Image: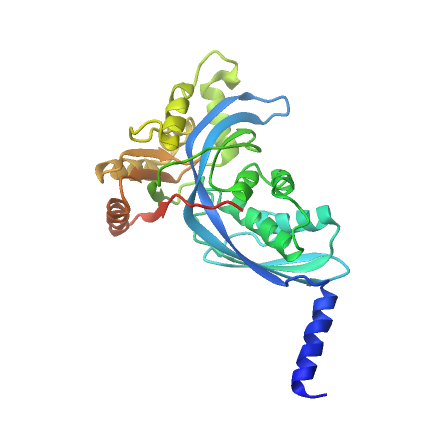
Length: 318
């Protein structure tokens, strides 16, 4: 057999062995910011009912997923850019791979290569974005057996932010975050995201809010609802006012994070038209009028020793 014929036969055999599927797919896992985040109350299942406007931004991780057939499934992950991240099922990307294989009845050896750029445990949904990217990649490799809705429902079993990260762009998210209503955005937003090494766990942040708002028994209002309609109007183009923001977690988290508070104040002094903490923090962002003004502010923060990133609205929808 000549060399060309051998290579052609090898490709056919391997294509048949994989059922005709691609063996590797690269995805970009985009971060999000919360332009609005309020807690509406405690649910019967012990979780909190939230209402949030999430917005996908251009800061992203690279996620490459490869697989080969196997009798029993296994998942391995290699990580560049963040050596302390777990490599077992505590990592949402690993958990997502196992969940997809189990849900679809597939067996495979899955290899995930993750290049981290999104700050970790910062309120930017970096882990959830990676998990969503793994779900999309595996769905592509297996010729899309799951619809986007099914992927989002599967993502909800992995983490509250995963459904939105599968969906992308901008949306109002309700429930625990799994109920998603698209939001039309008519303007491109420019952000500088500042991240500190401070950490306040999400359970602790919720615990502090429960203390402030008497377990959300209705005796004290968060005051967030008055901002919601104006945010939607600004995003849709019905209002040309500077975009307002709201995050109920700020009063619980920022007092514990002096560096994040300093970054927020510095963003204001550098010309941000609005500043806010994202999620349960401690990352904070400033909204700027242009890419130029945002990159100038980013560079200023970096010169002062802060971790800072420029990002803009990501026109992303899978």
